[in-house]
Image (cartoon, rainbow, N blue to C red):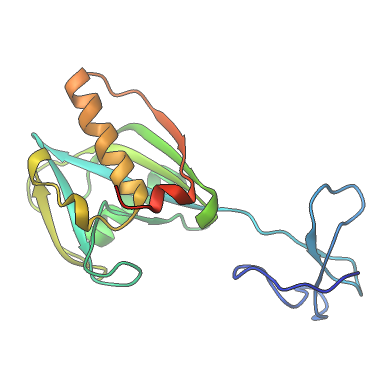
Length: 192
């Protein structure tokens, strides 16, 4: 088996026996995997689920300014990694509570965004705020409501947020909110 370097999220040592893993094509597989040459254990790396909300209050959207890296100081929608044993909708509600201090009413799954270059899949829900009040959590420096013409487009933290907000405002003008699916590629990171 040929030794190769490992991607950032891939294990270097076997979870079963502790031996150093190597990249190899296991029998019956079509991709090279991290494999233990001693016990044969295959270490699979799968995309991480991220969920969040697109909180709406009347004609405004709530954004949070990040207080942590990555992208500290930039604006984002409330969201984060789904925890084990948690549904994506539950993760969206929890993340909104943790980052913005309120519990929205989820309307519907609004977007599924595959982010292969980030090894993630994002699930975002349209959510109604029950009031205009929010309280920044430890991961947010501030939370603020923005009208469409006030969105800080050049200070958005992630391409998924930019995509989602642009799609939302297009849908709002059309008066319909279908569920969207997109695949974001590295070229989406380029400045407009």
